[in-house]
Amino acid sequence: MFKKESRTKIREKKHMKVRNRFSGTAERPRLAVFRSNEHMYAQIIDDTVGNTLVAASTVEKDVKAELEHTNTVEAASYLGKVIAERALDKGIKTVVFDRGGFIYQGKVQALAEAAREAGLEF
Image 1 (cartoon, one colour):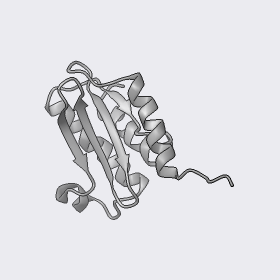
Image 2 (spheres, helix red, strand yellow):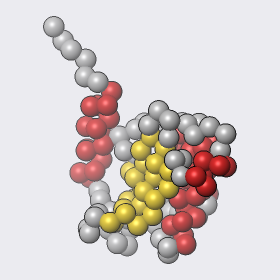
Image 3 (tube, helix red, strand yellow):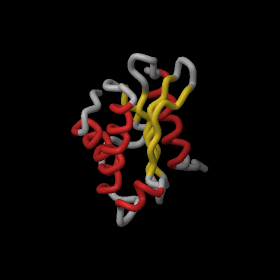
Image 4 (cartoon, helix red, strand yellow):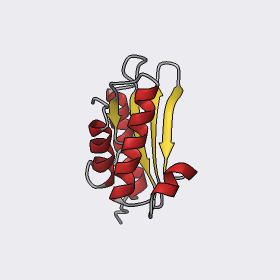
């Protein structure tokens, strides 16, 4: 009997396909996005040395204080603004967007568009 593969495994496969195509460098690091059922996480990573340069998530107290709910499109767009501001403070202007195997719609799209509006280029 045919057994359906879980959504998590499908997402992880998609993520590995995307990760094989590009990686973050010192000049253009990778903006990695992960979303769970309750929270969203965004990191800017330099893959050549394996360092996280900037990180933001809806778990942080200062971000959570600004939000009514942590798993909405509005929360994702706020997180996009926060990660862009922190990146610009560190001198990072251009990044490679890694959607983490998630479909580019809804929360992931809101985060990306908010980061673009706040000044990140990708």
